[in-house]
Every structure is written in C-alpha cells, then in structure tokens.
Image 1 (cartoon, rainbow, N blue to C red):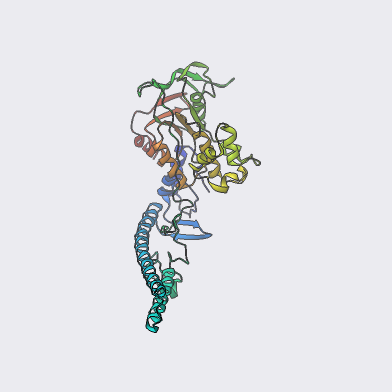
Image 2: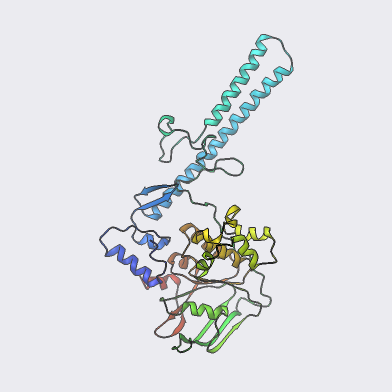
Length: 413
C-alpha cells in the first residue's frame, strides 16, 4: 500500500526492478507512481463507484483504451444531441400547428381531429426524446433495451454525465473523481531589474552543520535564476531538506553566504504540512486560508481554493476530515495566494492520486515563476525538471549534474 511514499529515488528504482525481475510471487499494489506501476504491473484493478473493475492490461494500455472509448462516447453524445434537437424542433412545430388550428376556432370535425393528431404525435415525440440515448454500449455492442436497460444518455438516465447546460458529456469508461481537475498557481509580480541571467538566490561557498555534528555539506556554490526548474536529488538522510531550509532562509549557513533578492517571495511546501493540517479539527479550509491572508475577502479565498479543485461544502469541512490529498491542495492554495516568485516543494506528491499529480505537473509547467523540487516521482522529474543538483552524503557536497535529466535517472535503472 503506497510502498514508494518514503523511499528515495534509488530505493524506488531498486524496488521496481526487484518486483519486475526477481520476485516470483503475486503482487497486489496500491500506488500513485506511474513509472513505478508501469515497471511491473501487468493488470489493473480500478476501484470506483463502490465496485472493482478488472483490466488485463498495463496502466498505459488501459488509459489509452479508456481514452479511445471516451472519444467514441463523445462522438456518439454529439450525434445524440443533434438528434434530440431535431426531435425538439419537430415537437415545437407540431405543437405550434395544433395551437394555430385551435386559435382559428374552427368547428369542423376534421380540423379538430387534425389538431388532436398533431398533439398526440407531439406527445409521442416527447416520450421518444426521454428514451433517446447512446446507440452502443461501452464494449461497442448495439444497444438492446432488454439486456442493457435504460440507455446511457437518456433523459431518465444520467450515467453519462451532464454539463451545466443539461447536455450529456459522455463520461469515459473510467470516471475520475474530477475529470476537469486543474491546479492553477497564479502569476507572480515581476522582479524589477532582474534579468534572466541574474540569480535570485546565490550560494557562495556555503557550509552547514547542526551543532555538535559533522557538516552536512561544505563549500556549496549554487545559483537559482528566475523561472528555474531545479530538481534536488539524493539518498534519504543526505541533507536535501536541509538544503531547502538554506534556500528559503529557514536555516542560516555556518560558513559562507546565501544572497537572496530582497523582493523575492518564496512559497515552501514541506512534508509535515499534511500532518499539521490533520490536527486542526476546529478549522476548515476557508478559515485556514483566510487566517493566513487576512486582506483577502471570502470570495477571494474561495477562488484560491477553487483553483485547486476545492469548492462548495468541502471548504467548510474540518481539515481533520479531509483526505490527505485534499489537505495538500489546501496547502497549495495558501502558498499560491502569496503569488510567489519561487515555489520550493519537498515531496509534494506523497498524498496525491495519479490524476492530482497530473494536474500538479501541468500547473507547475504553466507557472511563470521558478520551481525547486524534491521528489522520488520519476515521471514528475522527467516532465518538469531541467537541471539536477545532487546531495552526496559521503562526500558532504552538493553538485550540479552535468547532463540531461533522463541520463541522471537512467543511472539508477
């Protein structure tokens, strides 16, 4: 159950190699790490709507098939809407004709009979409209009412999903909790007078050690520029979080100097956020953001939470009742509200599901500021990071990896 959460990158890659190549027993694994799942999983079980759906395929193959079925449903849904509009027009015309005949006040029996016929046909069309649904089932078979019951997309069956205008949206075979989940980190104010080449943080021969211990690292020279995408990697306990503390100003160097732009705003997410929020049984998400941003109106706080998929009554629930992933989103919303120039994220994916991680990656790619990331999620590193700094515990140094991110990750495969 989430075996990669507290492993470093080397540990994750060792475990996936072992499960793929050496272990001969059965593995049932719950995980949010795409690369880890892809390395060994041969079948996928989806838990949704209080049921288990089994797929004899890899996660990638399953998602490809699900996307194709979703696209097919979208096409059928669009065709269904066109047919429904045609029937609605027919009903409108029939009702209009019958109404026009009544207004003429004709006492002719045949005229009245014609009006009644028009109304009867209109009523029949309305019933037909209620039954109209998709022509085929999810497995591509022609719909049969006796075998399959009410059609998906019919007015009396909303299993296909509906938009705010009442039109069918054709939900895919695998329905995410929130298929439109998007994380939006708002744009930061520009740092005036800082060019792309000038550093916003500059480490000059920095050393650090906790009192009474040997230095964690020595003589570190590191430059952070606007819009950076930096990954900090290393073994568990090597000092990655300590380095983050020096970057953000939470720690001061024992030797050397850390120079930061005086106008730089940093948003830091640390691993203890979720546990801290879990203890806040009397505070809701809206209270949490409001308390930390007192100049914001309630509407602005709600909008900030909504940017991370938290809406409606969810923002009024006690933080202790929210899932780990929802508490992570509350933390992100609070960080984003400061419009930081630099986001420093220490293992942000630990409590997120696969599709929330997708949303996070896309949100960070669109973010105009810089990102410094500590993560063991291989896919996230590949899609986001542009330069890697390694914290080497035995040598007590921090060095920039001279090569592509893919080349760094392949060293541990």
